[in-house]
Length: 239
Image 1 (cartoon, one colour):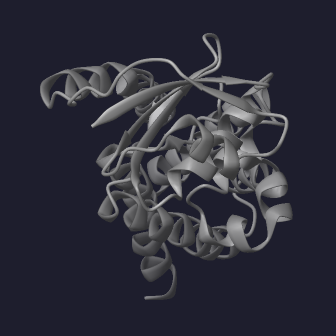
Image 2 (tube, rainbow, N blue to C red):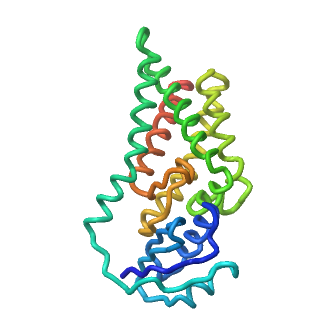
Image 3 (cartoon, helix red, strand yellow):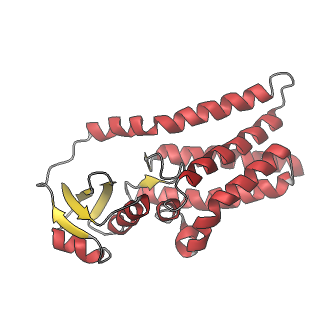
């Protein structure tokens, strides 16, 4: 069942991410969707929670009021909405792939294509994270295990993406960049996989908080592609 609540006190994407993170970790909650413009949170739960219970787990500055009655979730509408929300991700992947292919147009080299793809991937995705740098860490900590354990890691993560992107594009210390990619994205993929297995509907921070993307199998596939490329190239280097 779903319940909608007014949550007064939310002023930025950081607030939005914090509320989603706290409520998403409740045992009774299966998904949370916070709308910052309307100051509402749509919560899908297994057991009904009243406004007082919701307010009790949030920081004191947030005031909660019930906004609507419970309704049963439809299974078809969210799927359509999810595909629509993921369109920016697919479009970005198309542009990155096209740009990487064009760079190899005259002299095709599979390894060079993969290095350009990974470099552009990191640079483009870091750009979106910097659009709302203050709001990104809260969203990232919702599912990345290392960011949960070491909050400072979430703050430096966009800078790591820039560094790795430049290393791939300029061809600097490629083995180190590949190993770092496997470690960093491997950790994130563990968190993504756990969120998917727990059926938690949370916002993906892959494109920061400027673009609202749901955590889905597409996120898992996105990380897996980069991991497969990194492992394949590392094997080729040391083979």
